[in-house]
Amino acid sequence: MAIDYGKKRTGLAVSDPAQIIAQGLITVETPNLLLFLTDYFGREPVERVIIGRPVQNSGDDSENAGRVDAFITRFHKSFPQIPIETTDERFTSVLAHRAMIDGGLKKQARQNKALVDEISATIILQSYMESRRA
Image (cartoon, rainbow, N blue to C red; front, side):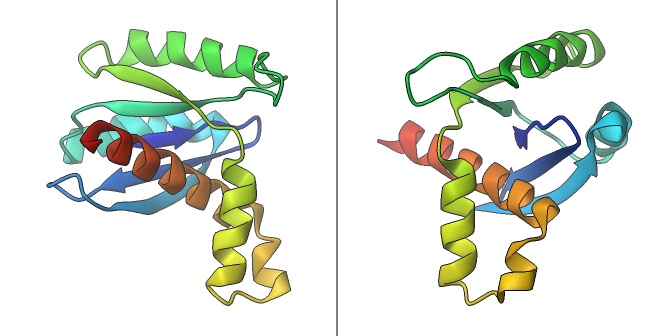
């Protein structure tokens, strides 16, 4: 599973059992995220969670990095059995918008921030899986 953690909304993506293809799962309002994950982990096996780490172009932490770190701490307390890895999420929103354009979505659909978050999580997970195969 990949998590694109945000202040208001959080995009989630999962892979197929063979870990070849990532697909968007849902976007959850961030205050409801741990409750959603508790329910999801109770129904579905999850080997590990990949969390996008917000980094600026300079390599410094972005404004959201502190919130992500705080979430990681809460996640570890709630789900100590599930390993977490972080990955650089730079440009995932840009790539998500590009994917939406390439997919032929109309401008109004591309303004759906929840969809952008879900696609960003999918890109994070797909990139992670591809880097492990390389």
